[in-house]
Length: 221
Image 1 (spheres, rainbow, N blue to C red):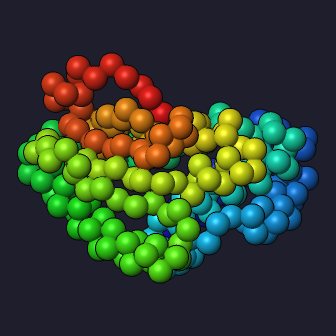
Image 2 (image 1 turned 30 degrees about the vertical axis):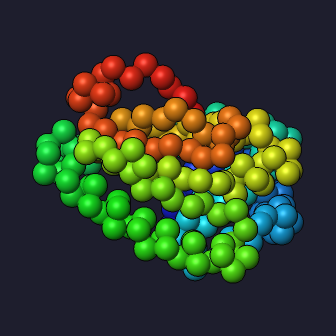
């Protein structure tokens, strides 16, 4: 997911130039200088071998802009970037709609196919004392037949934020999980997160026209 990391960095650069034009060049330069120093503080979660590691990379890039801007490029930036991406790719809504049962089945199959081998690899690595507290996966822990459901247990982002004083940023990062699923007409049902003190984050993607989506009142990060 190196391309997504680059996309987020470009978004942060645009945000900086848009909101802080007078200081933009110095903020961007300083962020580039800070990144290696901030990355050195991160736990080792396997690098490129870990297909989820890009999430930590994105957070550290965000933190580098946060520090370089004297904390002005904050959680609002992540939300604005996510909405930019949504608007850029909203044509996808015409192509993919998981309210159509066959498209939901395709999404469900592809998501579980992605996470099953990842989960096995993580168990091997953590059993050997590697990858620290990387995300472990509980696939469909409730056994539901509706939508796509899994828990991510443990969170290097929360570990990094807690260890380095960025817990105030974490909820804004997590909140972006609710924006992009709308491209597929999906709603994220979430009841707990590591950002708010749990040992896991739950993900349950359901069709946005379903009764489950309509009846869920929470907006938890």
